[in-house]
Amino acid sequence: MHILETRNLKYSYNNDIEALKGINFIAGRKQKIAIIGANGAGKSTLFKHFNGILTPSSGEVLVHGEPISKSNLKEIRKTVGIVFQNSDDQIFSPTVEEDIAFGPTNLGLDEETIQHRVNETLRLLSIEHLRDRVPHHLSGGEKKRVAIAGVLAMEPQVIVLDEPTAGLDPRGVKDLIGFLNELPEKYGMTIIFSTHSVELVPEIADYVYVLDKGAIVAQGGVRDVFGNEELLNEIGLEVPVFPRLIKSLNRRGMNIDMAFTFDETEDAIAREFSRLK
Ligand SMILES: Nc1ncnc2c1ncn2[C@@H]1O[C@H](COP(=O)(O)OP(=O)(O)OP(=O)(O)O)[C@@H](O)[C@H]1O
Image (cartoon, rainbow, N blue to C red):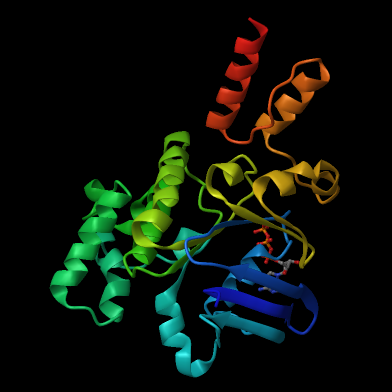
């Protein structure tokens, strides 16, 4: 059984704008899934179905094989946590500490467990120094970390992040990549994220869905999806810079193995140079 699945999911806003046109999406345990697509492709709308914020116009959303309904909504929201694109939608308590404690408190956990989770997530996100600050006075990147901490403190099995790197500085992006990559192994979590940064995708994802005008137009591993440059360009997306560079160098007579992440690319180029020596 899949941890999260949608079957022929359709959704129209105000019975008018068809935002999702029959999405079949599957997420397994400990998977790291990227959803990419141009502005307005339907990524956020899809995410809002994952824990019942939106109800499908038709089709189904299943969590652990169970369709989301009013009676299991509370349970579903324990299982699937969403970090929204705009942190201000998520942060509302007087202090960062209280904000992060809000979710675990709502779950009815005891004081000691709540405190433990708050401390743990503050540490994981490297925001211990923000503990007593007023969330609304934080910078965009700081708010983003607090929002992620708040969801993480509920220890969901699936964490969904809409544009998690938006507003983060380069160090923040690097930290986030390292941190997200640890969640499946350390805590058994499944990660689903959307991004406009195609460079981010190979650094985290093991599976990619490509959305265009409310429909899935491609899916597969990083290599498969980014192998189809024509399709990506057609829908306003690009292939990440490393595979593009390798392709271009190979056209000039080099023989570098295809690679997608920084580390893979460094190794592939070093291998070709040692062959040439
Ligand atoms: N509240 C709303 N009311 C009416 N239409 C909406 C609403 N929210 C989104 N839409 C429309 O639904 C479609 C999908 O929007 P959505 O926000 O899901 O796309 P997205 O892929 O997340 O875009 P972006 O990359 O810009 O965040 C768009 O045509 C958008 O205009």
